[in-house]
Image (cartoon, rainbow, N blue to C red):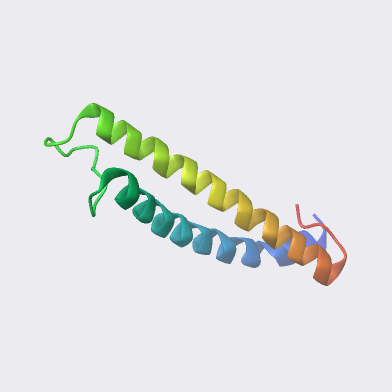
Length: 88
C-alpha cells in the first residue's frame, strides 16, 4: 500500500464522521419539509404506517449516500491538489 493511501486513512475517517453528521442534519430538514413534522418515524413506531416508515428509511439512505459520495470525492480532490496523488 502506498504511503499516500496510508496517510489519507485518518483524513478519510474524519471525513466519514463529518459526512454522517451532515447527512443527519440534511435528512432532518428534508423530513420537516416533506413530512411537516419534527421527527421522522422509527421502524417500531406503531402509530406510523408502513408507507411512512419505508419512505423515511429510503429518503435517509439516499441522502446519506449522496452526502457521503460528495464528501469522499471532495476529500480525494483536495488531496490531489495538495499532494499531487489520488487517494482512492
